[in-house]
Length: 248
Ligand SMILES: NC(=O)c1ccc[n+]([C@@H]2O[C@H](COP(=O)([O-])OP(=O)(O)OC[C@H]3O[C@@H](n4cnc5c(N)ncnc54)[C@H](OP(=O)(O)O)[C@@H]3O)[C@@H](O)[C@H]2O)c1
Image (tube, rainbow, N blue to C red):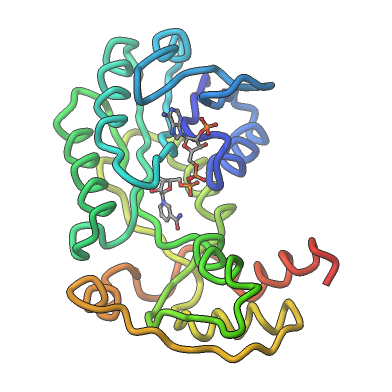
């Protein structure tokens, strides 16, 4: 099957490309930059999309601006309809309709635009990636204390999300399919402790309360699926792998 992975160069896209290839699929990454196994295209302008979608049966849509995505979603929908794509798989986020965050509102708008389109569709919502949680901690390595949001989180490994995407691609469009989350619900503070243990650091951790309706939405756990989660790889395992890669 010929598959185009938008965002195939990104955090989720890379393991998704590898997992699809390991199943024998012909996979190309849509990227703004040329490279091996890539089709050059820009979802903001539509440039290159018709060529990239030529002969493609399935699109796995992982691209994101991490800001406002609806414009890119609309460009992709138009191009995919023109190309006669048979299945679009859209990766969304658990709880987007319950937490008042601008990026999540945009994600809901993207889901709705796909639903309103003529494209056969699967929407998969996932919880925060391990990498996303580490993204709070990594940039603080030179600060005297570690600022840690007081929130629960159910982080999932991108490899586990990729496995689910491979299953979905092999089957018929499902509409909105079951949300997936990581193997444990823990606090970001607990995750930070595991991160420090793996990296051999013992810095003081300062809890930070996220204010307003945004904080309340996250504290209520709307971004978690509850247990048992779909993912198997724990955040502690991920932290240990990251530390080992740095030779710690
Ligand atoms: N991070 C999380 O915790 C999390 C949790 C659940 C769901 N999700 C969702 O999972 C998806 C993947 O997230 P991610 O963290 O893997 O993203 P990412 O690492 O930020 O990757 C973004 C990708 O989007 C592509 N892209 C951006 N602008 C583009 C444009 N104008 N034209 C073409 N491609 C463009 C980039 O490709 P080039 O730079 O190569 O062009 C890049 O590969 C997103 O939809 C996200 O909302 C994320």
